[in-house]
Length: 246
Length: 246
Image (tube, rainbow over all chains, first blue to last red; front, side):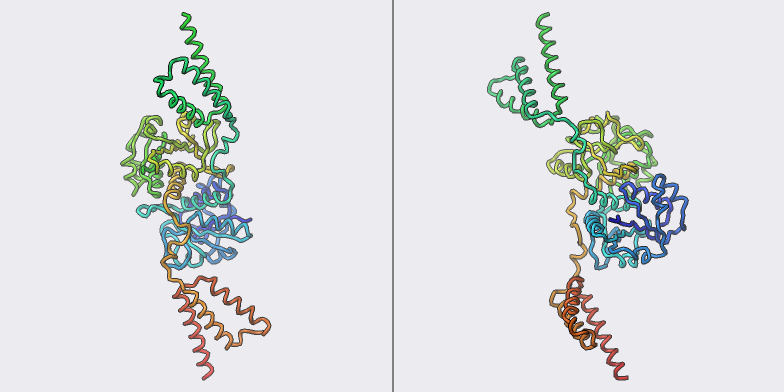
């Protein structure tokens, strides 16, 4: 599987090319192409800002035109801030990268076009793409810069391709208390609280006990935390007995 | 429904606070809180960089501690670059903002903590949160800055809350050709091509015609494009007749 090429079309500031390289590498993407960069190539400002992601710039291909940059691509997305008066499917970043995943898994090559900083892609660029991608920004305030747009597309690529557990990788290594252990903790508390005269008035006792049991189950305590609670309770009881004896 | 508060904890550079405000407003979020900013508040550098998103800064609350900043929150996420040795659920940005959507829809208040630029949140901050959020970056190159982290969380918030059609809002306004119109275009081509001796050899004619019919249907032509094809075909035929007469 060949990951998508991110193609910067007529980028202006070298700093933005460097920032785009960093944004790509954050999500494991290394195939950058650059079309007709304003300040030529290589660009020292790009290298300075890419620190750590310099290898993305080193491997970047430079092309004279969009046409030559996408020549080997089977499917090309054009990122634009707004819909165009062009008859082309408009994808969300999510749908676009899901489609890119399917295409690359089938051995196809995918390219994603990003326009120059100020003006974005021109219609002449967009017509060469198979589809448009638009980030669903606030219509009253849309100020994504080049590297931010690259970042969001890279994020969606990784989200669509990596098997990310939705939640809780870390939790898997945690030893949670069993239901029986939680129940015994509830027993222990109930016993001590009853001894302390906590359950009062009589008519409310069942409700109070049920609330406590519910709380213990809901907390998701670890085995160690259950032991800590037992220990705290024992210590309090110990102190109380001491006081009684004093 | 009250959208989540994005809480910048001990931010250092004013520029990054301004960039975070822009990133938030891109996705319609305006509730910023700032804990103990290094350079005091208000901060002219933040205002300069926020241009257009200044109202997010104007409305931002400044707090002396994480504790006071989250006091009214029902659920708090802490963004961290890596898992901690803490027993806390670890959410993806997607899962976190889906949960935030459910909580806010139920009238709950949600906060999201972002750490200072260099070091990120300290364990003392993270323990005050209900859950951790980690962006699934490339483990060999993780260089998200503060505003980028805010941008990705804002993007996921909007993605989880806005009804974004996966594809093709623009296409809905397009007048596509009906199946009958496509069929008539196929007839027209077939007729002209047959007259031009295109269908040859005899044994392959059925297959060639089927391929063409299949292509016309698959293209998803608009009504205007169908008319254009008819026009092109008529014009070619007209020229051919002229040449015959010369």
